[in-house]
Length: 355
Image (cartoon, rainbow, N blue to C red; front, side, top):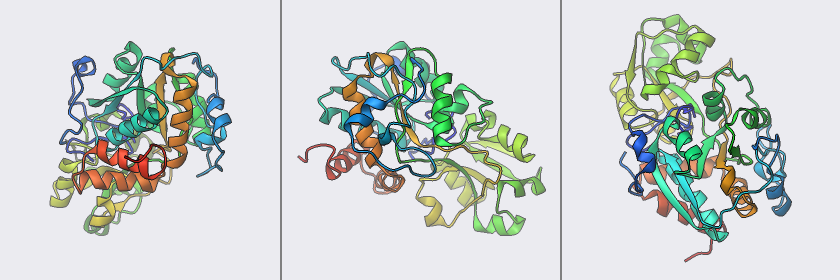
């Protein structure tokens, strides 16, 4: 997901934002305030760390051309331990449904391992979350590989999962590390209605160039300045839009505008169930502008002990993209609480004891 300035995706709540670009509605002070309601409407940097988690959890095969978190080769930065979760772990999340669900899944997995947790949902974008993580207001954050890499290193070229883990390990600020990435992923996508696709002959992002100056794009505000956004579309595909409408990404504003015809192109997340339900056309990306977006835990060194590593490795190996899509649907469509949805999934998959 492009949050890339935000946590920040693939990635919806009523003020949703992408893995690559969460919206900027929260203020910096929110990271140090008390917890938000459960649901708002709305290394040390050694490469290939995380081997401890692999040692205690059955290995999974590589998926999607990359390495899953459980075979010990997909780990990120870290010194193999040295932190302590004895005093608990505070989990922060970005301001969109999926990231909140992931935060509560992290809490469920850690709680089952005997780690005390506190979830602070809906804090905002990466510009808020990363400083909060470094400063000690939060200790752990659900992230997305490509989005985080582009935030830390805008000129990074890695797109394969393992290569991105290595690049992230080098790019992370001192005191932070990534743990092994999971099976689930959620990427940014640019979608149009079937009618717009037929009218303008749109099947791929490359086709947008033929309509330069004619089309309106809608997305979260930060997408205007993101590589996985307006900047990258121009640099990689030569695309220029008639107008950028500042709305949200994969949220009710941009999806409503797409339905009404107020925007021609919308920034959505690939786990958004409305894409299939509405029959929208996701434009293909032949030049690989959008990197892989496997979910990856970003944690402060001070809390990265073996209990945390093992628990999150188990979760990462169990949660699939299909699971994440279904959990998003339950919150966005069925209006269930993200914490309840996360706890129910964790219990059903043997990560916590059923109540």
